[in-house]
Length: 313
DNA sequence: CGTGCTCCCTGCAAGC
DNA sequence: TGCTTGCAGGGAGCAC
Image 1: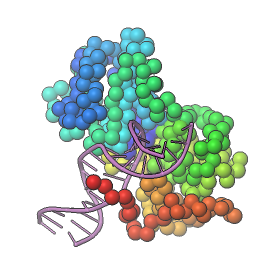
Image 2 (image 1 turned 30 degrees about the horizontal axis):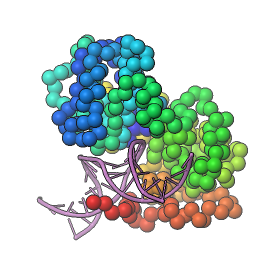
Image 3 (image 1 turned 135 degrees about the vertical axis):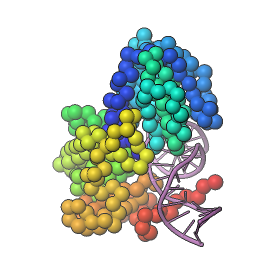
Image 4 (image 1 turned 180 degrees about the horizontal axis):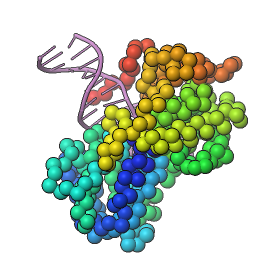
């Protein structure tokens, strides 16, 4: 699943499209089976004839800017779990099986948005203002986890606000209003690097621990970007470049396997329906920390690799 | 303002 | 072997 570093990787590979003019923008027949794209049917036509002036990343979102007016059309694009862009010069090739959006540029370049699980988004707005009004999540994003230097003071200020004080570290790190760009993989990796137990309550953190946490988040994300992102299960970059970040995952998806530092079996717990992997030895619970109340909602799993989940359908 | 719950999706691993 | 079940995941939208 693309997190901040993977989305940044995608952005960089889309940069070659900047300055190009859209000849045609279409939704695929498959896309029109979903309400979220039917809503875009009319607006996507507005892209024709526009120049793509910029592709920027905000957290895990890509924002596509279309000119000529700098405050002209904007596209909010989220890759969700399985969204991927394919860029090529071939227009006669068969589309990937879950393609949703096809952008043809005057240069002959074609960009295809393919999204297997359909959790991604591609939403056209008439202006930046409309986008920021309509897309609350984008408006509320916290600091960018990939920012260099990492804004540590701002990070600590955000941790100090009331809604964050009572959360566990595992919960708060996934909140895009704190650090935008952190996902489930780098959440576990950052906690491991900071040697902090995922059930630690934010208010229990000392100055030094907040510093380690910010540093760990920043380092994990930046290192992932340098390695070209994690190529895991369903993430693919536009040009098929394979990331190497998964090669240094210390705890993620390593339940029951020995910690690479101390050999203790890695454990997994579930927080807000998301798995968190950690080493119980390297990331000990805080001494004297209360926090026992929290264990109810963050139950440790009993079966290997399976979690009891709510029933659906 | 906040929290917590449900839903969106489909490939595929696990279980029978 | 072949079928069914349900997990994986981030975010939107809703009720309260």
